[in-house]
Amino acid sequence: TEEVLRNTEKLVFAGQVAVSIAHEVRNPLTTVKGMLQLANKDTALRHYDLIMSELERANLMVGEFMILGKPQAAVFKLENCGEILEEVLHLFAIQASLGGIKMTQCFGRNATILCDRNQIKQVFLNILKNAMEALPYGGNIHIQMDVEDEYQRVTFTDNGSGMTEDVLRRIGEPFHTTKPDGNGLGIMIVHRIMESHNGRIVIRSEEERGTSVEIRLPIS
Ligand code: ADP
Ligand code: MG
Image (cartoon, rainbow, N blue to C red; front, top):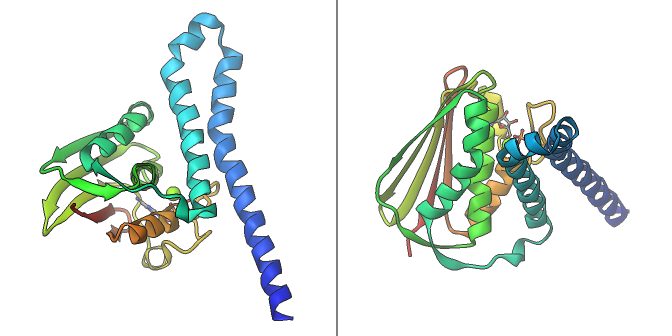
């Protein structure tokens, strides 16, 4: 019957999600394990920052998938948008410099927004992760923050691979990915979070030129 079919689909979906979680969390854990295997105590200390940032990455990724499971778990508070952004940028600093990626910022007016801090972190994280992955040989990521029409606006612009029209049209569809180890969930999660915050997201992209992702969140 129809219901049986739907249940089967749900199980397939859950299975795909489980596989994605396993892959995404395994990557940073493998990096950390590798570094610790190579290291004696002195060199382990030297890699401390990288180890910590990889573990944080694994931690945030598990959080990402938790949002999928329980979207109602949000805790809305008044938060400073720039502060959340700084925190996420800090997480990416080491990885970016290792990958020859220059991050530039232009922070204009910074406002207070009513939001779930972890979810907004997740939004910035997913967008920045995509920008970094679009720059396998290095490049630039420019982050701009300003206020317009009662909205806090944050724009991430990379000069990476960009997207074909087809990829751009399908972006946000679950499991639609062009990456061998992608899961195609990042932008879908961003969409969901923006919806629950009455925000907006606009993605512009041109193949071989780059991508800009603009998000707007209502100011409190
Ligand atoms: P994933 O990163 O796991 O593939 P996402 O939902 O985050 O899933 O992104 C979906 C697809 O959108 C990516 O596979 C990629 O093709 C494209 N994409 C997203 N952001 C960018 C970007 N900054 N530059 C180029 N392509 C991008
Ligand atoms: Mg992604």
